[in-house]
Structures are given as structure tokens and as C-alpha cells.
Image (cartoon, rainbow, N blue to C red):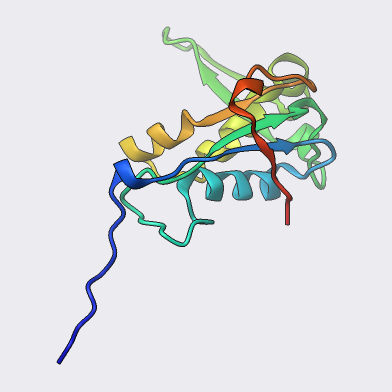
Amino acid sequence: MYTQKTFVLKPADAVKKWHLIDGKDQVVGRLATQIADLLRGKNNPKYTPNTDSGDYVVIVNAEKVKFTGAKWTDKIYYRHTNHMGGIKQRTAKEQLARQPEQILMSAVKGMLPKNSLGRKQLTKCKIFAGETHEHEAQNPQTFKLA
């Protein structure tokens, strides 16, 4: 009886593309799930969970994302200064004013695996607050959001 072998993608064989996503008027959580799927490579038919086979993602207009409900005032972002009692907090509205890229970055980070592979995949996510980005040389293709 013939049994078919399971396909396992080697990291050297992975073809990585560059995608450009416009975050204008996009809901943060819904946008972050699609970005995380691209970073992991789940849109690729040769997806292998333990291999970094995902694509590079460039996000522009991160300052124009939306939240649903009352998350602008209720959602809290925490950070720590690494000193005793140094925990700081900001609401989503304050975070948007100071570091708009961090809103999407923390949402995407929470949707990736919590291990070394997830940290490596997160480095392929390039987020910019405005219209311009510095990855024109890579010729990113515009990605159609679902």
C-alpha cells in the first residue's frame, strides 16, 4: 500500500513577498488578524507551523485606525520603566497621540506565537504612522483586505 509523505517546508525554500496594507479606517483587531496570518504564512498553501514561511508586511496610516465601542477611553496599554514601581499606563487615545505604531504592533504581537519563532516573525512587520514608508525598494504589492 502506497502512503503519501507529509510535506514539510524548509526555511531556505520559502518564497517571501512584500505586502503593503493601508490602515486607514480599519478596525484594529480585524486588521491585526490578517497581518498576523500574513506574517505566519497561513495564506500560503505550503504553510508549515514550525517554519518561518510568512511574508513581509508594510502598514501605512497606522494613525488612522479605528476601535469599536468605547475602547478609545477604556482600553489601557501598560509599559514598565524597569525601576521599582515604574509601571505606566496610557489609554488608547493617549497612545494614538504619542506612539500610533504601537497600537497595531501590540495587537499583532498578541496574535503571534509566544516563542522565538513568533518574535522572529514580528520583525517582518513594518508599521508607519503616515502615508510614506522607507521600503519602496522592496516593491511591496498592495494587499486586498478581506
